[in-house]
Amino acid sequence: MNKLEDLSVPVGVASRDGSYVLEVDTDEGYHRPYVTIMHWVEGEHLKEITDDHAFQMGLLMGKLHQATMDFNPPADFVRPAWDIDSFRTKMARLERYYSCFLSSEGWGLYQVAAEKIRSDLSAMSSNDDNYGLIHGDLHSGNIVFSEELPAPIDFGMCGYGYFLYDIAGALLELNPKLRRKYIQGYESIRRLERGYVRHLECFFVMVMIENYCHHSSDPRETSSLIHEQPYAQAYIRQYLNDISFLFEGIEPVMPGIPSVMDRNT
Image (cartoon, rainbow, N blue to C red; front, side, top):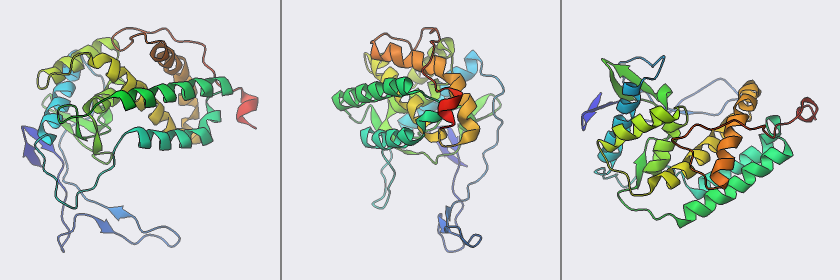
């Protein structure tokens, strides 16, 4: 493992020729995938997230962002950017699959939210304090705890983006109380800019929609996507009405979801 700023992170294993990324042979008919091998990071996934866990997870995110601010990438370092363009691409994918869990009315709500997200992103300014290299997917499933201390794993989504985007992805699974603890942990390392909540809520809805873009093509996910819509669409409506929701409980709404007949057509 690599120790960086008191962080334990996975480190790649080099092949005999010194390469960290290899193209491998597979069964006939499949593409030749690129693969990497990483050193194992000791720890266990959480079964339940407590106040202290949420604080430690926020502290971990703060340390990661602080460490990446000092990172000087080599000339051949290339990673994606999670921005307006990537969001537009994901929305185009969702347009092909939304009918499995959204009605036309529900999809219309998503489209209005997407337009507001793009508008809000266009108005944001980036600098070294709020934008840089991020994990991109640091939910609890990509964190292991050892002796009550968290360590990040699975950097497959690592790229460039706003630090608030990274935080928003972590807050999705937490209730309002745990979100506050998470932010307290983060701000014990890095102070957030004044008025950050409004921007963070934009990223919260953005990442939520992107998650649905990712899962909507898998029929095994359909039931859970439908189950989440009363809350997802409540968040979207709060966002569209400029009503802060991040640290408040929300009431689920009757969602715009497709009927069984719609899903079978």
